[in-house]
Amino acid sequence: SMWGSFDKGVVDVTNCFCVPHNESEDEVAADLEYARNMYELHKKVNPAEIIVGWYSTGSDVSEHSVLIHEYYTREAKNPVHVTVDTGLKGSKMDVKCYVSANIGVPGKTVGCMFTPVQVEINTYEPEKVGVDLIQQGKSIGNNKRTVSMVSDLTQVERACSNLQEKLTLVLEYVEEVLANKIQPDTSIGRYLLDLVNNVPKIEPEEFETMLNSNMKDLLMVVYLANLTRTQLALNEKLQTLTV
Image 1 (cartoon, rainbow, N blue to C red):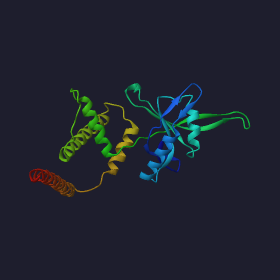
Image 2: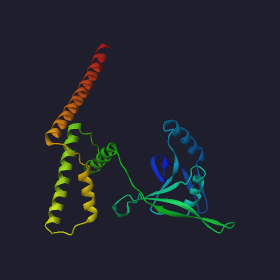
Image 3: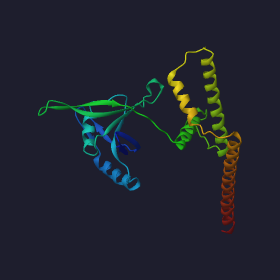
Image 4: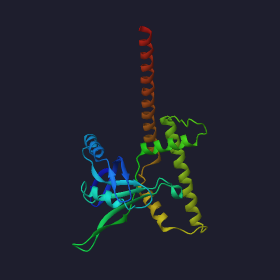
């Protein structure tokens, strides 16, 4: 099941959970009791979210998709079906989304046709940090594959270095286009124009003052966090000595 919101023809999927089921040649048996229990628990945690559809693993729509989709049409209005290719075909996890439409002659046997729709994946900054840590753990050569969180200052340093590398790459592309070394791309030009227009127009001195102020706030938060951690450690040791 997938949960989220629906507004002006756009479905926003923000949560999901799997429902155990068994598939045979001509039927699908799902654990509806489990689905109802998860439904009640999810509504307590996220009362504003509604069921917007369902998902399955695989690259294509299967013959069982019609049966499962029919169930979700009773749970949601115009549910969507998302397929996630966990087989990593083409070295990536491909995600596709479909909506259904009834086909056939009125009064006769009616079928269902799945039509693909556009998919846009949005991530938040904490999710990006988690994915980066997972990738670092996979690249480690030991069997444990453990990785620790980096400090806030290290994260800021890496973000600045990454931004500088991307700006260097953009400048090289623009210079090569101006020198007629490569063919210009209008779509890239529009992206760069939007990027430049979104940059706040402030003086360098004002930007430096703002950056230094935010850095001081970050250093103060780090200092208070370390101080609190030290006090908790001392408190635990004192309690151990008094026992």
